[in-house]
Image (cartoon, rainbow, N blue to C red):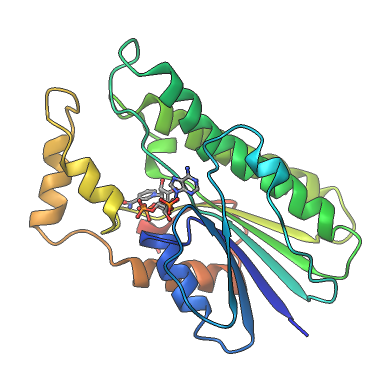
Amino acid sequence: MQKLVFYITGSSSGIGLALTSYVLKQPDFRVIGYARRCKMANPNYTHIYADFSLPGIASSVEIPLFETAEHIVLINNAGTLGDVKPVGEIDSKMLEQTFTLNTIAPAVLTNRIISLYGKTKAKITIVNISSGAARHPVESWAGYCASKAALDMFSLVIQAEQRLKEQQKVTVLSVAPGVVDTPMQDLVRQIPVDIFPQSERFHHYKTQGMLENPEKIAKKIVELIFNPPNETLIDLRNR
Ligand SMILES: NC(=O)c1ccc[n+]([C@@H]2O[C@H](COP(=O)([O-])OP(=O)(O)OC[C@H]3O[C@@H](n4cnc5c(N)ncnc54)[C@H](OP(=O)(O)O)[C@@H]3O)[C@@H](O)[C@H]2O)c1
């Protein structure tokens, strides 16, 4: 019997891979990972191929049900910066894909998980991996900033709905992880300064050793899951 089940999107790289590895250190935790690549081999890990930038995938992808689970955790971690350009120059198709991956997929998966486990005895925790960029504008990151800001508001509404209930079944956290040393940051540093005016700041983080280690961030996120704070919007830089 599986007591604790994690569904983790973007389980193949960076924060998602670190979370998957960290969770699987517990012999009785089960992980269902979603991504285009599979980077994990473990008897307690099941990989499901999904490209969440495509319309309809989050509504149709398999979500295996564990009827007797006591605690279900969905970590909406898969994300993209998208096409980094000022508005007016962004590739429109890529802009659509950014919102599909960063906002629509997490919203739909959350809706499905709460519906699927609504009548079981399982406690549900939703963790949306947001960004500081959801809360501050960054030039040339309009799609990224806005798609993550929508995720923050989606989380706040779920929490408000839960407060209306006698018993809170669902806990939701929208977590800005800080600046973390992952392939996404490698990508940020490759964007030329004429397209991305804040580029210098991100080079500085790397050269000054200011990037957070993904394993450390994974540990902090798991600690939040088991000891949730009262607030919904979390910034790990303050913890
Ligand atoms: N690193 C940072 O400093 C930082 C800061 C703030 C927020 N974040 C957020 O943290 C999350 C993880 O980022 P990361 O830094 O760990 O990036 P990463 O190393 O690039 O990993 C991104 C993950 O998302 C998955 N993904 C990307 N496109 C996908 C698609 N179309 N369908 C399904 N999965 C897809 C990737 O899997 P596949 O390529 O195998 O599909 C990969 O597992 C993102 O939501 C990001 O916005 C990161």
